[in-house]
Length: 175
Image (tube, rainbow, N blue to C red; front, side, top):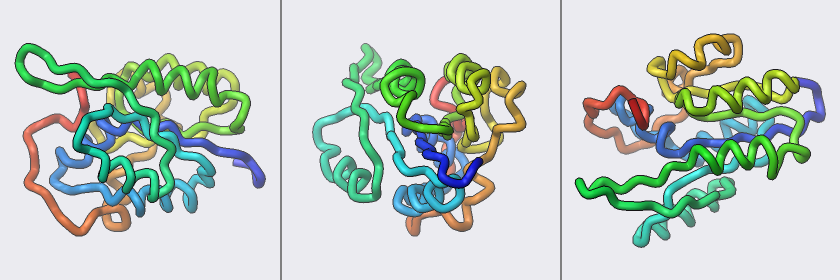
């Protein structure tokens, strides 16, 4: 990173949230926003999130913490699972909509669906880091290990005050 670089973060909120929760802790999003600013000089942090009625307080909290929210409509499956896949919007914003506005990108996800974006940014010298929630990130990203930083390694400074019960998920939002 050069001094004066303009860095943006593009955050897959579900992958981040599920990844840290699978380890039994809750991310403090205010602390995480300051972490992005102080450690990676991130001026703008785009948080891609499914939009659900009733979550207005959460959305306000995230905006007050300094995130720019990009909403994805959600759908409910026959099984009653609510899904809001943000992958396409994140790629579109990082590779086209905001591309000319930043020098380096921080991608926050361990999802292999972002490998094409990571490759695209790497080839153009615009990739700063890929922050994965934990050690369970896609094998498709392994060839970019030099860019990988794990959020769980900063747990002591990023954990919220309310611990949670460990889940049985792998920490990835999809298989």
